[in-house]
Structure formats: structure tokens, C-alpha cells
Image (tube, rainbow, N blue to C red):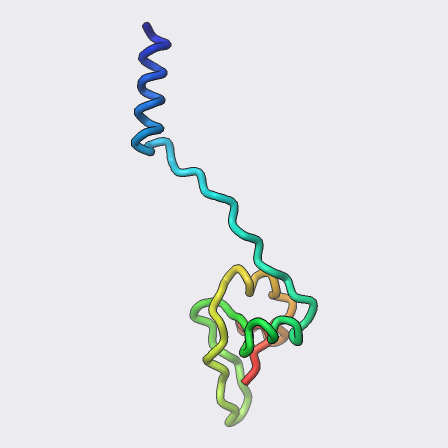
Length: 90
């Protein structure tokens, strides 16, 4: 009787999703060899949501980069000024 009750509880939990969702594996973000390759796909660079371009003097910051955390993290090596935007380009 105990086994049957346990099976019923498990089946009920699975059907209503109380055991937690199993996440599908995330698609791996592409790591580009250099900024030339990255800029072919992301014309103005790629950065973290909320990142701001670090500039000097009267230069206008780049604001039209693609915001994508996974792609940025895969290409963090290309963020030379460490401002959260890799391969920023006007």
C-alpha cells in the first residue's frame, strides 16, 4: 500500500510540476576569434545590459551595441577597456 501511495504522490507531483522544472540546455554562445569577426555579426559590438561605453574627451559613447550577456561573456577577452562592451564600434 505504501508503494502505491508513493507512486501516486510522485505522479501527481510530476503532473502539476511541483518537483521543479528541468531546464533545457542553453545554446552555447559563439566565441569569436577577434573583433573583426564579431563585428560582422554584431555591427556595433556586444555588451551587457546596462553597460555604458567608456570614452575620453568629447567623444560620443557608443549606445547602439547589441545587449546580450551570454555572447558578451563568451567574448569578454575582446573588451579592452573593461566597460562591459566588447568590440564597440560606431
